Image 1 (cartoon, rainbow, N blue to C red):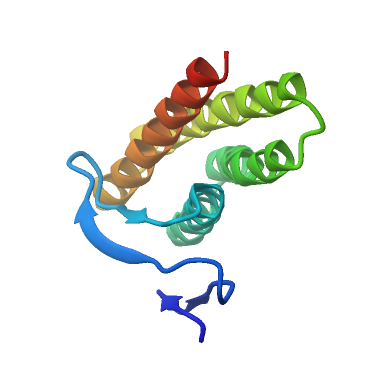
Image 2 (cartoon, one colour):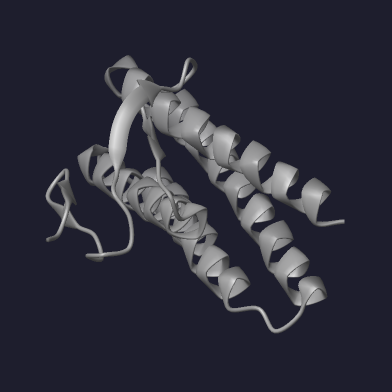
Length: 149
């Protein structure tokens, strides 16, 4: 039996997703999952996907091309490095990958801020929601680093 959420298929027999609470500062849902590793993998995937979908809506101009390129790379790197962290060969390697995740989340928030501030107000609400998610991911990775010491 496979679970679905927002048309995304999740691995069967691994866990069940329940969307029973919302984050207070963000419109992005948090999920209770029995396997936290896969929860954050799914969350970082959705984050990168939402950044890409947001960027597709932005006007095409020379400034946005540069900002979009940077924000797409940084947001995708968050999840990619988290997957690498889960395959780490040592605790030191794990912590280093999580630090990279945090750095990329911070960089994504920076590029999103520039995009929000240099485009019309019609993109502000959605952009701020995604930027808030980047900041929440940064805090999650900071917490993981602290508890891994």
